[in-house]
Length: 135
Image 1: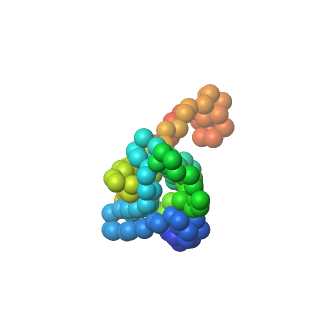
Image 2 (image 1 turned 180 degrees about the vertical axis):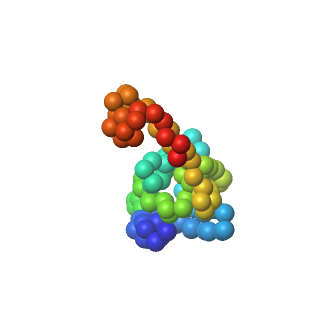
Image 3 (image 1 turned 45 degrees about the vertical axis):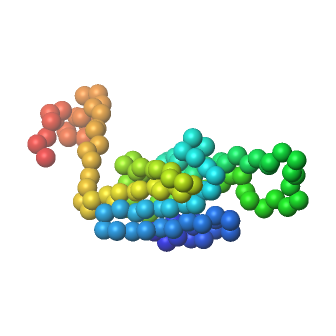
């Protein structure tokens, strides 16, 4: 999890984020004022989470910017803790606060990886008999 904590520290100063942890999950809270669910995208890929948030900025009629410091977008790529299950993650946007819930994998949780069969010559060279072995 230290890689995620370090990545949160490297976010621009204008971005505020909190990381919470329980026995069952992580919760990442990111302030994205002015962003909506429609202008925010959260992607999970290769043990990383990517957050893209946009907001529209308008000026009242007759006004122009003298100084403009509020960012219009956030593009952040954050590493997930090794026990976070990105496939089961969920996200919600409420009043400009993005909440990403990352369940933890259950210890010992595993999934079967199917093994495709090869041709018979391969079986003979591995097992020596060409018959399936009871392992």
